[in-house]
Length: 122
Image 1 (cartoon, rainbow, N blue to C red):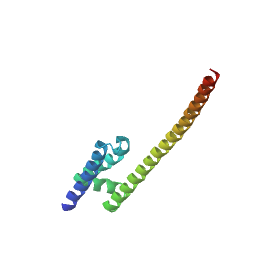
Image 2 (image 1 turned 60 degrees about the vertical axis):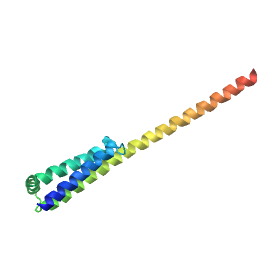
Image 3 (image 1 turned 135 degrees about the horizontal axis):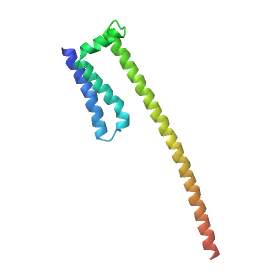
Image 4 (image 1 turned 90 degrees about the horizontal axis):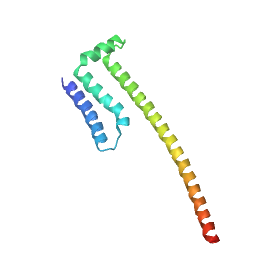
């Protein structure tokens, strides 16, 4: 029973920690959603541990702990893949912004030169 309480406390801690980071705007919901899902599933399976054991045995795991480690590994690999996708999207946006800023700087420089030429003619 004490392990169940520790598991629920740990899962709630993750869930509340992620929600607090989102509330303080240190983490966006887009990035925190996966962690929220992990926390909710952790609480759910800590409360309904018999369901977790039934799923583990139905999937062919001899020990429920092996299933838990496999599930956590799968979730964290999935979260890592998701974060990599977000990182690549951010890199593409940064490249696009750098190109746009370069174009704007070039146009400003051209406009300044045209303004100097117009002032010199007057």
